[in-house]
Length: 175
Image (cartoon, rainbow, N blue to C red; front, side, top):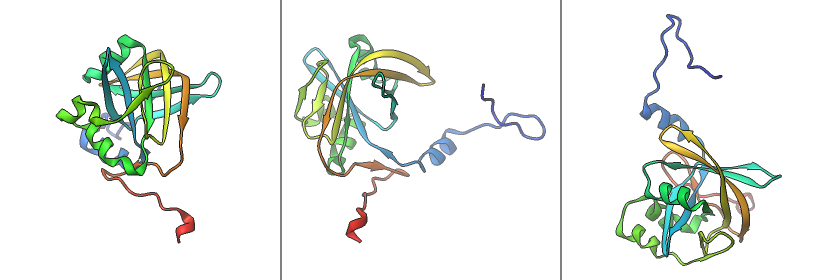
């Protein structure tokens, strides 16, 4: 079990949300949109807390805020898709992160379904269609583990997020 670091006077050090965000913001992440549907209504949310878990069986995880409407629908449905965004999809990242009318209209993003019925963004850099196999508590988020049912993708550069910004990936061959 990991315990909080102790100061010399045996008082537990407090970690502020601002400090937590500041330090974790130094870790560059890819940007994804996690999708599911409520009947015919497509839902999506921008997520950077995504990781592979296992090759055999093929498992991934995403962390979804518990207060998100998508959270409840996703758990009820038992399926979701992770769409890896390319650097030309910054507008989609911002749209699915906000609470705009456009987000309620799935950010006007074209999609299709693969194995589970979750919407897969047509122009994503990669996509992973999953059935939920486990859910763990994670503070104000749920850690959702999905079994990969189908996947696909294309070529391009990923959309990255670092220190509150979206830096471009530079190809070493470009000098």
